[in-house]
Length: 73
Image (cartoon, rainbow, N blue to C red; front, side, top):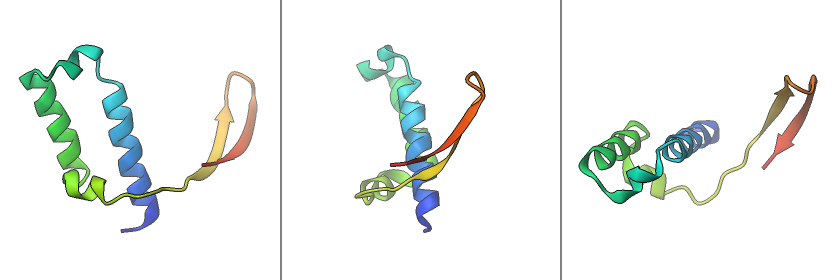
């Protein structure tokens, strides 16, 4: 699987988990089901667990500041 696909999956899972309210961390059934759906949508836990590192680079367009630049992680 290309690195960009792994990066995209990890980013989307991370964003999905960060967007959950703090109540979702209380292990209620609805929250666990949502987390499971997100994990399954990105290849399951084994796929996510295989990631050991990632690299990202791209272009950022700051609309508010009317500027752009590159980034690397």
